[in-house]
Every structure is written in C-alpha cells, then in structure tokens.
Length: 119
Image (tube, helix red, strand yellow):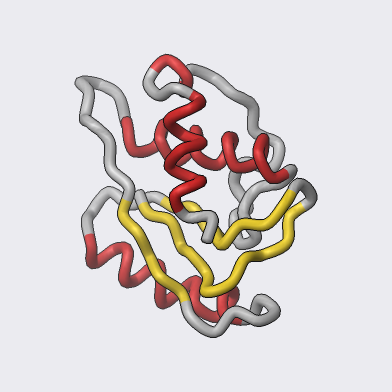
C-alpha cells in the first residue's frame, strides 16, 4: 500500500492536502515503481505539481483477510471524510461506504496516517 504525495498542497472541498493518490499493491516495490510510472502523467499534470514522492504504508497481516485492501479502503474513506472527496487521482472510493474496515483500524489511526502527509 502506498501514498503518492505532491510537492505542494492540493485544494479539496474541506481543506488542502499534499496527498494526490492512495493505492495498493500485492507484489512489493517493483509494483509501486510501475504504478508510479503509470500515474506520473496524471499526477504531474495537476496544477503546480512538479515532483512526487511515494511512501509505503503497511499493516499487520491477518489470516484470511486482505489487510492491505482494508487499509487502502479505510484510508480513502477517511480522506474523503476529512477533505470532502477522494484524493485527486483516485477513482475508487467516490461512492464507497464503510464496511468492516473500522474493525481492523481505528478512525483516529487512519486520520493520523493521512495527517502525516498533509505537507
């Protein structure tokens, strides 16, 4: 799981955040690099964005639970709650609702992770 952070804060309905994209990967750093290359065109096209940094976010694994998927969904929904919409380059989460993500992560912890990258 990773967060793409722009060099400057982006405008959202409820404030500003440097987070431009929240994504997930199952197969490590090589997948993040491939995703970064694929998303770079869209991300760098945002007004004033000249550089990006990608930060890996992890969580403990659990049996029979795709915890990285729950973390991604929880972060996107928390971002939408905090800023009024999903990150600029995310499509997933616009109409999504909370399911069981809060059984695995607390809302305050998800928001703390997002605030870490506010800029």
